[in-house]
Amino acid sequence: MQPQIIGLPKFEDPRGNLSFIEEDKHIEFTIQRTYWIYDVPSGQVRGGHAFKKQHELIVALSGSFDVEVDNGEKKQNFSLSRSYYGLYIPAGLWRQMQNFSTNSVALVLSSTHFDENDYIYDYSDFLKYRNIHG
Ligand code: TYD
Image (cartoon, rainbow, N blue to C red; front, side, top):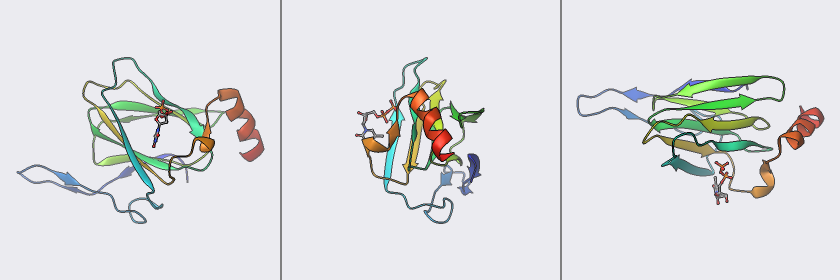
């Protein structure tokens, strides 16, 4: 699967809207971990690295930010600003989050537990990894 925006259910209600995600239904993986990024100062960049195994869904629960996804040959930019859309990112891609608005919250649903060995932190290592595994 390619990186892509996935529409999530949205129950519009005069009392306030509701959205949800169910594993193996709206996303094709079992959620082993959920984390969120918040209180990001203006101009800061988060998540500049790749994962070997982890795939993920990123949701802008509040506010907006951009996610740049890079396969080593081309970069795609996804702007997230609605909590009823998620960005699915498969394993093996470099991704970074930037242009966070004030009070934005990035929710990340991950297919793996936290494992530092799954990270590729260095961009030249990433390019080598892509050549071997891409
Ligand atoms: P990291 O993924 O490096 O954040 P970013 O890529 O946005 O800079 O995580 C920052 C720190 O948080 C790092 O020391 C590892 C720790 N961490 C956990 O312990 N568990 C987690 O699930 C995550 C995502 C990070």
